[in-house]
Image 1: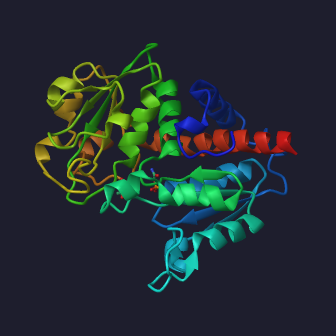
Image 2 (image 1 turned 90 degrees about the vertical axis):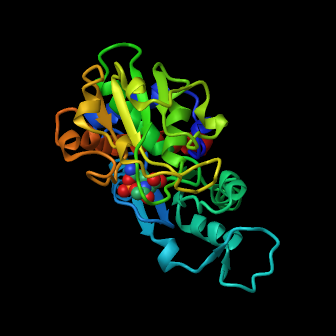
Image 3 (image 1 turned 90 degrees about the horizontal axis):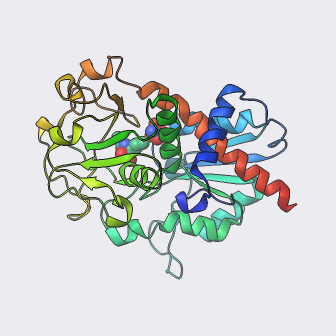
Length: 319
Ligand code: AN0
Ligand code: CP
C-alpha cells in the first residue's frame, strides 16, 4: 500500500483485518520494519484516540514519531493553488508538505470537513494536496469525508465479536446539537458495503448520506424497525449532506436506550468515540455488557499498525 487515504488504496480488507489481529497478539514482531523511519502526525483538529493509537502503532513497528498540532501551532496553510496569498494564510501547502517530507518518511493528517462548502469538502483538497506535494506516503487520520483507520478498527472489532458468518450491522444516526461531519458514517458504509455483513442505515429524513458512500446499504427510516435482530448497532451523529452541514433535528427519541437495544439480537453497541452520554446514548447502554466502545477504541492501535506495516513493507520493496 502506498497511501491510506481511502478504501480505494487497499486491495484486501480481510488481509488488513488479519494483520491487525496478528499485531494485537504479538505487537512487536515487526519492529525491524520501521527502524530509522519517522512518522509525522499533523493535526488540524482535536484528537485523543487517533493521536495516541497511531503513535503507539508506529512505535510498535520501531518508528520514531513527531506530532504537531498544525492547526494551532503552525503557520496558516493555503491549500489552493494559484492564489494571491494576501489574506491570513502565511504558507502554502506546496512548500509545507515538501518540507515536512524532508523530516518524515510517512505523514498522517487529520483535517475535518469545514461543513460550509460541500463541493470543497468532498473534493478532499487537503489530502490530495499533501499527497501531490509531499511525495511520501499519506495516512488519513480523518479527512473531510472519511475516517478509514476508524473503519478498519470497526472491522477488526466486528470480526472479533461476530457469532455468525454474516452479521446484521445497523448504522444509526443519534441526536446532537452540534453539526458533525459525515466522515465516520461515510467511511463505515464504504468499508461495510464490500464486506460480509448485512448493512442497514437508519436516520431521520434529510440525513441521507452521499450515494457514493451509502452504496447498497438498505435505508430504513423507522429506527425501531431497523434495529430488529441487529447483531451490531453502530451509533453516530452526522449533519445533513443534502442541506449541507445543517442540524435539521435534535429529536431525542433517536437516542440509543436499553429498550431499543432489547430489540436487537443480543446486539453489541459500537461508537467511534468521543460520545456525549445521555444525549446520544444512555449511561445504561454505555455501562452495560452490550457496549464494546472501549475494545473498539483499543483496536485503533491495531488498525493503524496493520496499515503502517503494509506501507513500510511497500517502501522496503521499492528500495
Ligand atoms: C468527530 C466527527 O464526528 O467526525 C470525530 C470523531 C472521531 N467527532 C466530534 O467532533 C465530536
Ligand atoms: N475515534 C476517534 O478518531 O477519536 P479521536 O477523535 O479522539 O481521535
